Amino acid sequence: MNFATVVVENQTVCGQNALEYILACFLKNRTADSGVRIVTDVIKSALVSKMSGSNLVSCGNNCTFTPSGTLNLTEVELTPCAFHINLELCYQDLEGVYNGLNSGNLNTQDLGADFNRALRELLIGTMGETFEKVLWQGTTGTTMTGCTCTVDSLPSQILTNHIHASGVTLSKANIIGYVDQMMAKLPPCLLEDTSKLKIYMNPKSLLYYKQALGALGVILPSESLPTTYDGIEIYTIGAIPDNKMFVFQPENLVIAVGAMDNFSQLNILDMRQHNLDNSVRMSIQGKVDAKFIYEAEVVALG
Image (cartoon, rainbow, N blue to C red):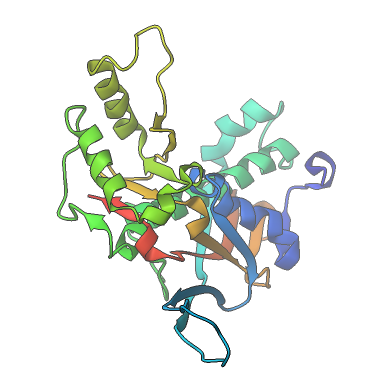
């Protein structure tokens, strides 16, 4: 789609036409970029199956068929929760932004394509930032109103291997020891192919990690600082709180985006053409959920 030619002063897209905007809201972030599993077009809920077996192998010849062992099939249900932004801005507050993107007088010209693009990026960027905070912190830092459902934060989903859940204070003096403890809690099957694992932390924790390696003389000042632990990639996400780290395979995390129905929408409306208000109204709405498939194969610290 060529926005320079098709976007006018007012824009309303809903349903399937809003797909690219809604996907950008929830998938244009560091978490989604790390290689997690993505499920789209979820009408109400999506079931992701988990299968495991025990005592399936028997000894001896098999002259008579005798079933043995147990096959366990469980399901993780993802139910996308609706998030929306409703915003109204006075043109006086937007004049500096507009004049930086378009030559001319804001009060005598219609909204330009570049300006519309800036407004869309504001909505999409704000929604994406909020969703990632909900994922890792369980909160946005502000009170959200009108919530009829919730997205369980990722730390709250980890029950089996959540070490030092009461909290720790990371520093360059102890961070390597804590990473060692996390790796020791991983199931052995995950260590057979460590290329599929990632260690998740925020940039401040990575700085402590690099400082710790430098203090141990592992690297020289002239060398580039590594972002791995024994070959396992360290992946940074700004939304992860201080003093928390996680280890898991990215494909173990599923982000489910709701179906593109008439409730999935993006609107930008110039109010001067409707009720003569000297303002612009914007709204965007979509649905999303996220869950770990194998909770016992995730290790959390803090």
